[in-house]
Length: 150
Image 1: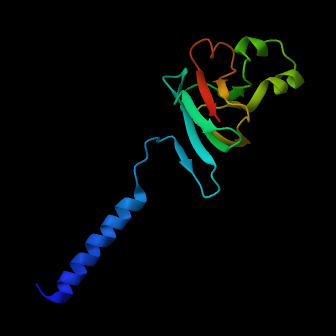
Image 2 (image 1 turned 90 degrees about the horizontal axis):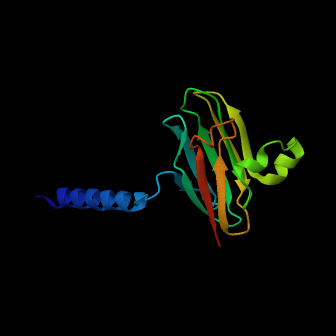
């Protein structure tokens, strides 16, 4: 092998290794970060009345972007309740009262549509429930947990 071919082979090998190292392993396929440290999550509907994923973990005070994809066949919503709030607390609440009970909300999204919202995670560590607020959907299993760590 000529020195020139050997140099090319070594260069290609080093380049390939560098690309592999930059890619790294992504153990959480639902989350990605950007240079500012914010996280992005994609949540979709699985089996019509289940969120996929149904658990998300973030840092307190972190900027979060959630894209909710309604892959179901009926309208769905995505809301995150304040800590200690239950889906039953929303029943009969006025719009103003409801806003006080929520961390963030995406109103009903039609089947096949998606919506993206950016918000700041609560500063208080804990478990925050997220649900679909369409009547009967949370009771059918459209419930998940946003865990906020310190």
